[in-house]
Image 1: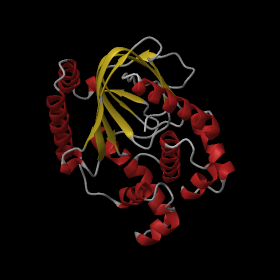
Image 2 (image 1 turned 45 degrees about the horizontal axis):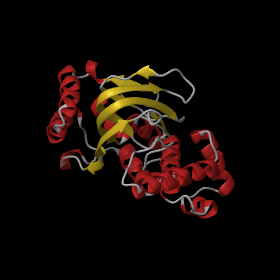
Image 3 (image 1 turned 135 degrees about the vertical axis):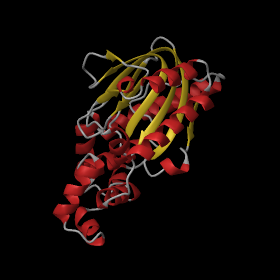
Length: 280
């Protein structure tokens, strides 16, 4: 089971979406690899999961409530048995305002931030009380917004344009449109958003590329590079090597294998969410 839900309207400038996930991990299906993403992830879950900050590092057991920041390398997640999860995708400036996040803060245990919420939400998920869990998180984030929220500055306005243009907007034209100097905009961007503009644009464009290949493995790499503003196909390949630790062709072949496996399971009346290198 996987579905997406919008947050309360006052939160939508800071929170991209919520998602709800339930999956049972049979032997051989517990190993997941997640690509670098364009949002900061707030995650509550019931079950047993272990996270490695890189694909080769030793995994460490996760708390049932934590925040994971933007990364430039793939991560490995091991989950066992039944997992129920409520994920909140925060724009980086939302994570900065609500939790003091900045680039380089890898994983934050939310027990230190709010122990009652960190205990209550995983307990509700264990009981299958999805709506109640989401309402608790919604109320909690609204409370933090009232305490810590602020009007968007030029850095946040520029970052919003990066998301709207899939990472193709440039600091020079953005600074001119916002009536500030490029240097002043870069400084405000880092202060307000918690990450510099070049890194965020890179992550937005990369995630869009691997999502599109995941959904359509037969998409032309040259066409994809052109659509997303890469200099050429070689530039796209270099970014994949750097951020995914594989080429786009390798990722595309893996996506084809997973699609064939999914079709075969549906033909037999069965379905299991497979461990994939990225989740769209």
